[in-house]
Image (tube, rainbow, N blue to C red; front, side, top):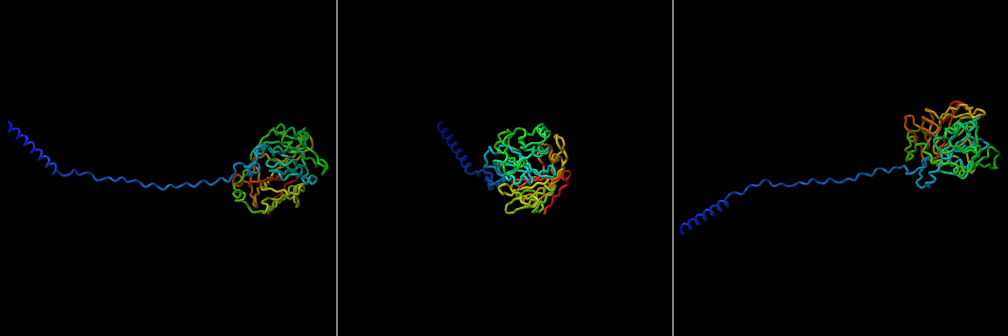
Length: 362
């Protein structure tokens, strides 16, 4: 028995040895090719350029387009005062007319010039001489959404203006703030105190009336216009405004019949933009007195010109209603872009009134 166990152990040992030898001599298992992870290069980060700074100021005066970022907010919120200013020889020189943001020149009886001066960004203590209303005045200034200030008018014209919704401040209807000066005889010496006029209205700031270019040299009037340095207008023997471009002042300087138009302190009147609108004038006898000329400004079609810097362009214009703004377009249909600053609007008759006027650029 013992010898059999020894033999068995010996055989097992031999088998194990053979197995180990076989394992040692067997070839290595071949592994697949080694993989190398490739990392894509990170693209260089480019910083997008900042958008160009908007040249338009954050806050502007609505009737001039001039930067108002430093203005008192309460001043910006006040209404525009549209004041009838006499422009006959007997009334000159006027007081503080140079501070108006926008001035409309209209024709009244006998071809006489009269003005609608609109004050908002600058408010002098007093202005004058103040004269009477005409039936077209509520249509001329209605889009400003503020009061119309005047001395008086025919009863029918006052009633029509009140019925239309236009706010009125008039000496003849009990408005206060009017006074007479001693430098001229009546009726050419009626003046008014703006603080008193503001105290009689609850109106708020006017909406913007025109489009403005920022920077000003981008104005399509300048970009597309024809060079000019003089605008000669003949509307009647008593309405002959002339505008001359003054490069050093950067403004159009106003004269009348060849004489510089100056205010009582010697300031020559000037404008950044001069707008000329061809208009029809019709007689209106609905006031209860003599018929007066009425300039038609509510229309769906009109022509004219706009001058800014030393250039001008022909335009078309329209005004849908009393409280709608004027729409000024170039001949190609683009909205006219004025240069920020004061604007005078010349309403020149193409029919009626004292006869067809003329406009010449040179």
